[in-house]
Image (cartoon, rainbow, N blue to C red; front, side, top):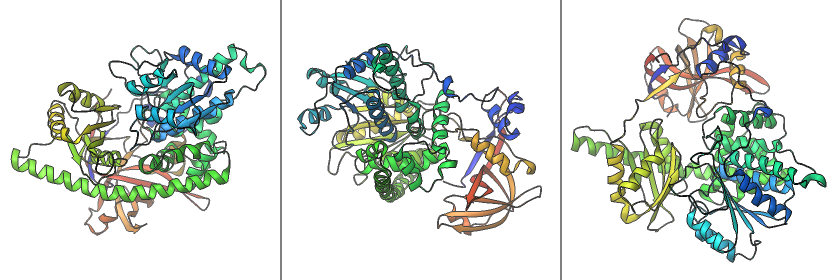
Length: 587
């Protein structure tokens, strides 16, 4: 996607007092552009209190389980948020004094998503696992009506911890903790699944403290596992509001100081990252894909085991296995991506012939040869490129009549609400669905695909899509293009969803360009006003080497530090060419 031509709006300057309070003027300007009037407070003591609805009931069930030596089974999900949430729950419960804690993660193909009835049945039948007295779901469960009912019929208590949007009715669990519930008082609705677990463990520790549980045992520090919270939060692409940024910042600080779990260390080191300089982007683009690869292609149990490992050699071996799965995932995704783009091109060409160039409001693609665990990545890439909702479907397993789908949408279009509209308009067409504003999952029977596509297209046509404009923090002067500015921006995060990483635009003269690493374009750029020549990189843009370029390149870029053999050098990460630019209206 690198170096596609884009339209850009410059973020308005606010003139906020943060400009003088920030460590660097460029960082101050960036903070002000994101609505801050003072430097952010990322102190641990400033975390929001754990006052989520259902918390008292959840702590009562879990505290009784600990005090009565009951068996607790943590049931997670097969993505990075679910894996980190599972590992955190198991680690924290054991540290709090639970003696019988185990965990299960559903298989994407065999069980499907969440606490499904088939997963609960397998747990009853599996003599190799202890029978549960309490099931605790993490990062899932809010839509698991049938699975919860089956567990309750067997006399098992169920505590749901989740962050996904609920349906009109809730499962019959003993307790539900979810900031997305209607009427929940917790100020931040953006917690990831692992964030919800962290707050449940905070509240449980307080409840046990009131019961004098720690009179004869050590009271654990829960912040020792904030690296897991940071990884899961960044990986799940939840909005980084102030409280989430606080959690991620604290986790990054511990990773940089080397005070992280063996699994997180191993994942980052397998990706070639230096722990001392780890950023949120490293968690999202280096560690998370390796963890997610297990859930997509194999068994997320590998990922959870890595995050639970206390031995360096074991964690490194599991991280190596995850890296190998990630390479296999890349190969599968590359082929699927090519096939998907060809399918979209055919759809768009056919539409132009039939309807005089009318655009598609949504893209729906499928292929019987695709891997159900990778369709979400394909949908995400197509959504980024075409800036419209995308639903990608594949058989739940080879030859299956059940299709599993992943849906992605651009800003301004609520993906789960779009699927809910389809379900209301055509009851029975979708078997199951759930998710967030930007990402959702679904399943349907193959014979329902034509009806689903028709209703989806009709509902999407009712939406008002936003124009495809990217946002820039404006140009930087030659005096601001410095290592010091880049370091300040690196430390000024964490950056992510809802608090975007700083991106600037400027005109440069292209002095040199060459291919590096087969796929990337190494550039030497000079500001159009003259001055020092700067190193730059355009990832995935090697194909542009042979094209004619204008003398001046107007581009969007990030200001970064290239570290090599102990040296720090300024580098521009060139993202896109600028086709048109305008100033955003003042707020």
